[in-house]
Amino acid sequence: MEIPRTRFARTSDGVHIAYQVVGDGPIDLVLVASGLGLGQIWRGLRTGSFLKRLASFSRLILLDRRGTGLSDHILDQAQQLTLEGRMEDVRAVMDAAGSPRAALLGLDASGGSVAVMFAATLPERTAALIVYGASAREVRAPDYPIGPTLAEFDAEVAEIERSWGTEELARRWVASLYPAAQDDPAEVEDYVAWMLSLGGPGDAAMGSRVDRDTDIRDLLPSVRVPTLVIHRRDDAHEVEHGRYLAAHIPGAEFTELPGDAHMWDVGDDLPAEVERFLATIRQEEIELDRYLATVLFTDIVGSTSIAAAGGDRAWRALVEEHHHIIRGALARYRGTEMDTAGDGFFATFDGPARAVRCVLAAIQSLRHLPIEIRAGVHTGEMQTIDGKAGGIAVTLGARIAGMADPSQILVSQTVKDLVAGSGLTFEDAGWHELKGVPDSWHLYRVAYEPA
Image 1 (spheres, one colour):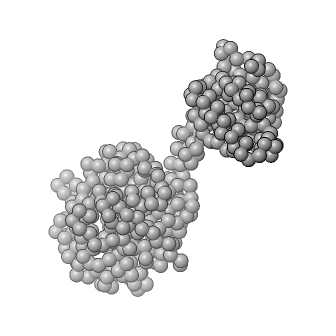
Image 2: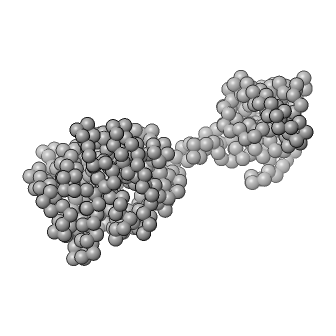
Image 3: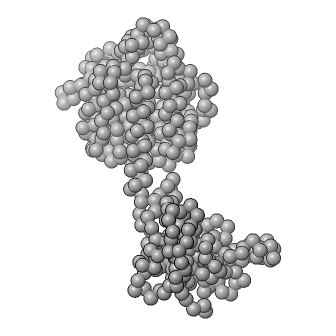
């Protein structure tokens, strides 16, 4: 399997973080884990296909956290594996990958803790939070009766330092994490290769000790983004960990998957659940991002012939003067410039009368130039799509403008009805079929006396 190109992001504290970007789905998804091993993970028995599945519905961003895999391992005291430092790894990679906002999928206790802190601290950059096989803390406490005792955990860390990268440790972990594969030599060999791709025994032991001492319970009530907690019912890393997280994160959804595997690359049910949740979140955001606005479209009539007759230099001067006048009118009538394409403007207003008066003022101000504009105005429901205003109202406004004559303003019946009492007057322009828009639309011309 071809390994995606590995790039490096530099954090604010000077650590180089290896990352990869795969897929072109509608939402960015950052995989956060104690270690992925970007140099090996695509060659794994199941890991490569698991990542490809995630990338089929997202723009998947992978990273090796500091101290693991292809990222920097030589860390001084200021660069140690604190939650803050590992959160900075995620932020630096998102910045480098051009991702202003992403969903986070935190795997296991370590990845889950970082993802939770990121979501609680930077909600504006977190579209959704998903954690799998995670926990609020690794070691049990008097007020947290879940997980191994401190002595049991420390004995496991000592075994990691002694046996890291050996078949013995890999066989024991496979038996615990994926019981169905415990007698498969290929699974053991695959796990050994993955361990060695992460780093040495000191790296692994250090990360485990940090996980042992981490407790994110106080962070959970501060998470204010859509959250999904996933845990397998018979996971050796008890399902009570997941239930606790879901109970203490406001509004969190909890999904209990069947099975006893702790590994995240077993079966399609985990990526399917992630896809379902992200699709739900995306649809909700589309619905919540709907709003009522008035759209105005203008363009210069016959611009091609005017440009050809006057030459490029004269045309550029005309367009610059035209833009100056339109922008002045927008400022006066509180319009928001949304887009400018060549000689046309797309703007929005919070009231239809202001939009009509804006274009009336622009037409009068353009009288001294050898150009005329036409305009279309419509009020309707809009939505934010990929950070831009869109929806049927935008299409309608553009189509209405395209039917106007020089120095003419066409509006929809919605606009005419909403400006009653404003002093604006209209003439019937008839019913029209508009390309790409269902039904017939009753249009009106704004009546005015040319200066």
